[in-house]
Length: 325
Image (cartoon, rainbow, N blue to C red):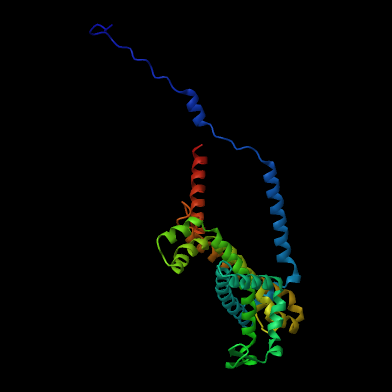
């Protein structure tokens, strides 16, 4: 029924959504977690006690630590450590790739040789390998290249070739290749079989399939595992002291024999330098993993600088919310 002309229309007053406004004004309070606070307090106390003892105990002789930390003799040993670790890492990874390909080959001879090498080198302690190579000249004074059981085309004097640094690099590389082979093989096997089939369906050469399609995807799995091996390799360089090569640890040992009162500061110097080297390797690992994560994850992991900016932004927003309340 239509209203007569001129009649006033009464509009219903707006009804406020009181429950919604109350819920909006209220803040969500997190559940109390006393166990977390207790564990945090215990950890903070233990860390504080450890730091206090580390800084105040005169036995550590931090003044002597500062004296030795950048001494030329220590830096020379550090340079030898870096040189041996770099050569061994490159040669070990190259050998590991070849051994992994041989292990995955269809040739039974290559598979058997690769498996035997990995089995033997992973079973023999590294110090034994180094000492055996150090005394290798007692077994073979000359090395020759030629026809087996026939004439030799080239002959080498083993004593001239096997310098201390060569023995160290060869020993570490042989040992590293055995472990790198399993890391690389595991990375290759982690690539989905469909990737191999798709590459083969395109008619690409086998070598191109491996280096351009399979291996870059395998690096996502290889990188973190091999970096662990690389960190172990850096620490394993301390064993080359036993083949008369004065690396970082060997130099500290020698100086400790000359200055027996400075043994603890010298060990602290070695510890800090190894911490610095392994930390740098971990930083490189992060960026390599981030690079090869492209295309595999929707969002790349944030860099430390990005994490810092995000943390500061969240802190400012929280302060503003607290101030508004």
